[in-house]
Image (cartoon, rainbow, N blue to C red; front, side, top):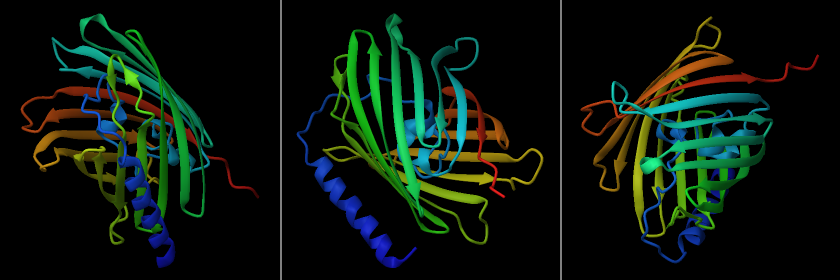
Length: 283
């Protein structure tokens, strides 16, 4: 990609940040709907299957693929573990649907439905999704917008705006948040990916995330992928770690564990299965 194209992408992202963050401040907490589990271990520049509807809708259009997945998450796994979330969805060449069921405290149950659409060409992809929140007396709708751009063969950039419309979910407003991020794959080791993103609200930078992933060559019979992620607050103090392992190619299963910043215990454990297919090349 040319330097001029990279400059145009960066300029548009800065304009979007300035516009989106110049909104009235609202100091109510944002997590009255539990975030989708994929946001604990994926980045807006790395996901490229049906889970992208929860992280960056633009990435639904990066590949001409069809995929389906399901995931369940348990809090405090062990004798006192509790099932906290079940989610799943599909993507068909950029048209996607996702469903999330949350088991919250005090017997509250929440449901989130998402419908997404994305497309891409020449390394640039854009997409959006509509989110509908139900349960616990809530009936609210929000929007997300996303972009993804391959600036260099080894560098991918992304920009996501979430909670457009700032829906009120179970009494509290979901904060408008913009998420710029990147992934760099060092040319000598293309199987290694280094990623980072930031979550920015109208008031300030809310948090940062840093991660690394390594995936074995897809030609092996059972390719594996290892991921590690660190989430911090605005002062770069450790907030949480996530570690994951997946096995398989087109049909893949994975296990992801999350811990507090002190790595004192496993606070959440999730298991997912994913199946993806790309069209065969035309002869």
